[in-house]
Image (cartoon, rainbow, N blue to C red; front, side):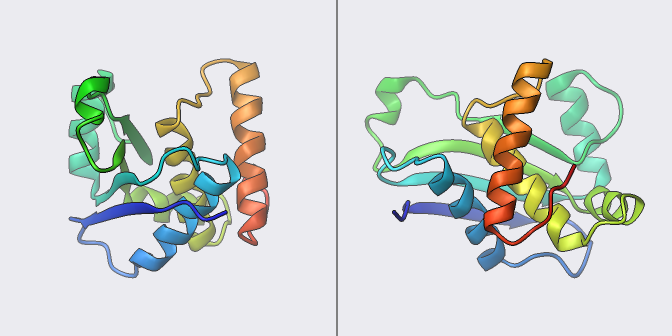
Length: 158
């Protein structure tokens, strides 16, 4: 199965050596196909790569949390009647903080590219209503992440 999707990649980070569009496409495709998101004829999402300052602002404005984080997901919130008028099915936006991704990979002794893949898959799962607010949800979401990353050739991130 191949899930068609449109990925808009916005890079506003000063960080260099970032994954390219093809890598993000591969990681998003793996997550969508693993979850069999074929009923969405054409999925549309945006990934935005930012620096710490923007992530701090987003975290404060949308989660009322002071400080930065590695990834935030913003599922689409359009009313169904508006979605029905579009040619595609918007999932939402994923924001990744490049300096934090790099720092965490180093601190956790992970390959940087594997951490980028993990956090991208994690963000896609959030857009598809998966969460980790309790142990049961966390176990389910982590299991999906592990399986998807394994398909991509990456080790268990946990």
